[in-house]
Length: 424
Image (cartoon, rainbow, N blue to C red; front, side):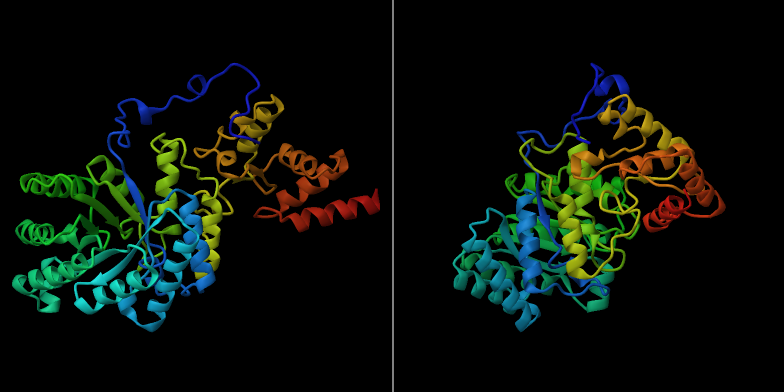
């Protein structure tokens, strides 16, 4: 089943009324470039449940992020120790030798030792690495850490100065921005820009923000930069998913002025995770907001590779990559899909009960047999596997399904087929 198959002259507009586009204003126009930063190898593997991927897996995830057209990737925090330095160095060397266009970044606390570790890797490998230097900015963080603003300003300035002395670009990260006071953010942002930061990373570190909060915070940040005469300084959005708003907040952040969006594969990360970059890309693609040349055909592979590398299983109902994403065993739903396929209308069959066209991302609609199924499910299942749907066989499978309380496995149905072949 392909995304473009048609059997008649019906258009998508004839068959689907799209309320999403009624008052839609395009946010990713050619005049406003928005890029993405993959945090899987840094923020993502901070999850207490993940296994730190092997270096081979990290290199594969780097390559897949590059293939997906993701423009930036955070490859680690070298200040964390020897292994982190070794892995970041190997990843940087691989990106250099393979001439990957994806741009590398490393995280650093606002501490000169952390920044120096990034400088060393950059100079050793001979490529530019963006420094993402972070400090907690909210009053709750300041109270817990016993930080005063003067010290925060000095730590930030020293970290940025060292990066710029070695010609490395700096993105200044205020952790917990969405719970920080405007008068503190103003001083931290001005200080960072004056010392040479080329981007400000606005962070929803604990998943606190709602779209209204994002609009207000990003407007505040952009107005401050415009007031400094620095509209060239970029604004990043880094979101977490504690309230279940990680993906939707990232899309709103684009609308409200962020021009680089962070996320991780499958949304892995601390607590309930970061914003899921795969879902952000999926939705922007369906909204028609990504450039036509951006190829997401490896999006599913990226998700599966990340799951295997981190030992985090993909939830059955996870969008796109979950086992149930395109499965149905309900008789009414299956019947509609089957009718569409019988009309030779694969495009319709891929959308009749799916808001995401499976064929567009390398999957297909799957019809199973269970206690909510009709006989048409059984007939479809058998024909799909080249088995003739004889009435006695259909009745036997259908009866087994109705006696149960779940979907029959493939092995169970094949066993019924074998038994019917013997008795028949």
